[in-house]
Length: 540
Image (cartoon, rainbow, N blue to C red; front, side, top):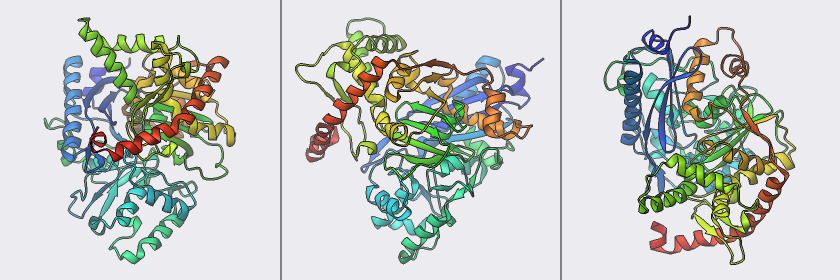
């Protein structure tokens, strides 16, 4: 007889996964069968400070502690017990960005998130130097841009890491990083499963005239693949996580990962010829490759799975934020009418109605650029809806245009993989907020990528569940299986999800929409320029 959830928690057999998303910090507790048994969450938002997107250190720690407190509260409510010990812990967070610390463990400048697009000069120079696409948001781009800007803090750097790496360090004392997250700091050599030695040497030579007291490898985290022990929860770490003092030290902790890696795990997409699309505040697709691409592409980032396989990643800074803003407008209208609001129903009605619209959205076009969008070459953004007098302007087409916009940039990037590089995939799985309304986001994405899209019942569990599964892989992989086999047999056995294939009409319509979208890009570019030229607009 298998233990129930309460017994699992009281025996210290539950596994904790924590993920710092862009708008929510989430904690998931799983049992020995890798099934979620309790959750906790904390809502937060990034802030634009001195022109850069950031989260304060206070917000990071308050958010983590509030999220864990919410988990404890839910465990008490559900099972009438307390979390004292755990079998494993995993920490994940939004990838990339820049957290630089001095020797006293003091952060030198506010955390610079993945959302910042101020690193164009550095990214271009490093891409040329390495003959490898280095995206704007990668840690190495942020570091070199700080050097180019002459920022005085650079000389004092003792440790440079990501948000996941920082939390892990504070919980365990270990300066390590999972290979997937590390691949968003500096490119990984697929043979050595470590930072590219030639690129490290080139960077050190590039900055040698500055005469800093460090070399690049001195300040970067150690790279660890999934399944490696990355340290144990210390007493100090336990106190930082659980302010109530109930959680005890000693729990093994898996390598910290980025949200891209945990998304691959949560959708069982770590094998070659599989892929996944995460669609929430931002969106990205991850396609696990059989072979290297023929050349570097500015729109495609090369990262790795949590066990080190090469992955082609198309990352879009914007996805559902603008869409959500429009849905909230309809919510306000409903409130004005005095009608009780059920947001799940609002989304379901509007999303489902969108599918009754024209396949090409009636000529309507939306740009969901809350922030800049590197894939289309914009370092800043301005949400914008465009139509002409002759377009078919109705609610269905309006909503469909915004749904198409949420994955429009993703399509532009993936067209390179599927059309130019002839990359083959057997399965693409979707997860994230866009897919919460059954069939709608799935159908839109299928049309965009011209590929069948699967969504699993567990898709809503997200990255916190994914990093919990990596914690399980650390302590429950008794057969010594590769990660893909462990996921197939121990987690997803018999769960292939619900698949939707694209219809010719939807594919044709999305193709027409994206051509209108590309043709209208100069309007978005002009709006961004105007925004920068107008003090009032720049603040809006």
